[in-house]
Length: 210
Image (tube, rainbow, N blue to C red; front, side):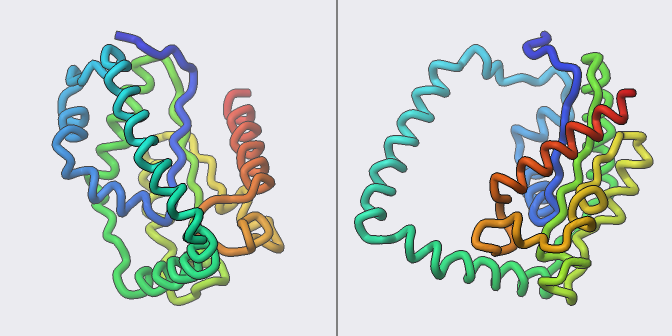
């Protein structure tokens, strides 16, 4: 059943934590059902009312929690101290315990994804988004650039078009920290950073489709 009609699928891969997520999610029974059985479905499109009710209830719980934190200046403390703590933890953990890349399973995932997308008469694009904490960037020269070469090679071997933001964006900037809130690496870009990245992705896809 074709629930969505699209011409392109853009897979954004983030070098900081997508391998960690992959190693966790490849053991999830529901996700494995999707992976191993093309016909498996939870028919989620038929359960939208139930999904909405769960989301509304969850948001209500979070709203109450964050209102309480606001009056305790919780967010200000997190902004001031928590971000630096997370930054330090990330730098240390990269150096101590780099995450392994299960190459065969990783390749199989993208091979199946490509076949599925093409079976829907669409095109799969792979976007590599680097992690500023990783080599070759200046924040931590002792870390390994989390499987960058391996990941890129696997995608190339599968003939999936690559939009490499390491090459197209990061390497071309004189001041990468200017694209991060409060000039702190890791996490999300500023509005300007997202605009730059979106434009690169858009223009590269136009180049591929000339």
